[in-house]
Amino acid sequence: MAAIAQRLSFSASLRNQRGWKTALIFAAPAILLFTLFIVVPIFNAAGASFYNWNGLRAPTADKFIGFNNFLQLLGNKTFQRALFNTGLLIGASLFIQLPLGLAMAALVGGRRWGSVAFRMIFFLPFILAEIATGLIFHYIFDGDVGIISVVSQWFGGPPIALLADPNLAIIGILVAATWKYFGFHMMLYIAGMQAIDRSLYEAAEIDGANAWERFIYVTVPGIASTIRLSVFFAILGCLQFFDLVVPLTGGGPLNGSHTIVSFLYYFGIGRMRIGFGDAVGVVLFVICVVVAIGYRRWVMRND
Image 1 (cartoon, rainbow, N blue to C red):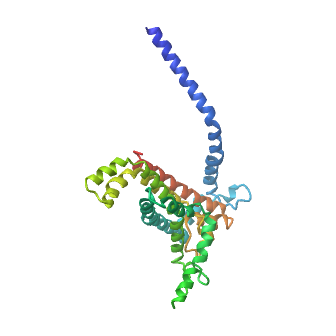
Image 2 (image 1 turned 60 degrees about the horizontal axis):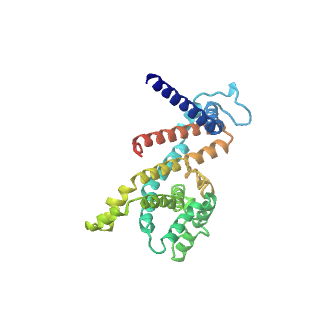
Image 3 (image 1 turned 180 degrees about the vertical axis):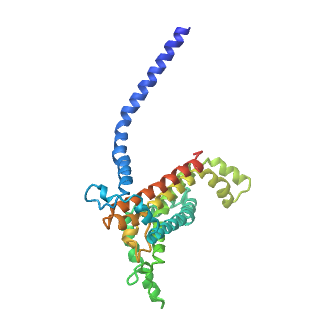
């Protein structure tokens, strides 16, 4: 019996080794690509952030400035404004965009007449390219020919140039972002709602629960994991928000509507200060990693 058990154990160990070898063979291309296009650029950017480098040639020892790029970054008022604007985007996403998506999912998520058509209408902005969305809203908010300004003047009001005000331009970005992305979260919630057992709604209805109570006590708990995933996507998306800023405001006026990534682009790459831009990228990378790991550990640990 001992010999048989030893032979079976050896066979199982051999199968495990073969399984690891097979997995390694299939994973090798993905690991290679991940290393070349993710790991290596991260280390290169981290190293270049310690140099006063314009990106044209390899950084040399005489361009080494240590943590000076990071010290300049911390004292930069435009970067502080970019951090604040990114926080506004996160707040608007969590407290306006996601609740709006959840409300629309509750309204058009069932099998009512026309619900599929309304889903497509609300989801279409997400399919539209960010640049096209930015150009559309740039026209809407234009102080001369924009729809909002024209309507205001029809009723005897002043022209409204929202994007020309350094303190209000970010509102235009928030509106455009909400319009574009809430449909994505709506579809996530609809997918989660379709996985809820219908008998739970029937039981709640028999117990006398109205539509609002069924939504609060059946729907929301049933899609709790989907909501947590949606919040995760929203936060990381806001931290990396860039595409809508360029056609809408370009970070202006007076650098009042920059996000972290647009600040990196205009003040790093745009001004040929690649080392400074890399410092911004390192800070953004650290923020994203801390948020992702912390959120996964403390909020999504059971998902």
